[in-house]
Length: 199
Image (cartoon, rainbow, N blue to C red):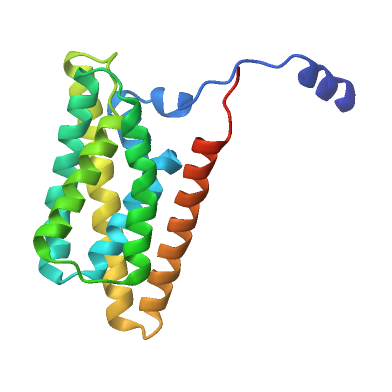
């Protein structure tokens, strides 16, 4: 009895919609879940946190304010302005840049680190914009995306800093993560540049 039902289900496919699960809970939760369920955002945000853990404690703490604020501004701009194709390319390149910096474990000059954090936050925020939302719905969505940026970066920055400080192998684990992030970025960029789209 089970096999005919299964076969019938397979023969009657339904439409699938991206992010349907998060939209059921309202705009705040849609904003909270959208960036962390999309690899093109969550992996560079992970790299931001790992890179912040490699910097001085003061520089790492500054990320907790500057990155979510940049994401908030970027998301607001992305919700108000037309979609820009080049933003996607900038975000893909951020995989390579951030992953390479984590791999090299370089302590960046404070002004350069801050500029990198703000640029990444703005570009990824812009890509998370939702032009179809207005009023309170938009504000709730913006609050959700900003909360996601703060929670992810604060927890992972603290975890990476603690791992480096307390474990002799911590720095190697962080650098290995950076190599994987850079490799994923390289493959994604190559795929987007060299694989032809549907004609």
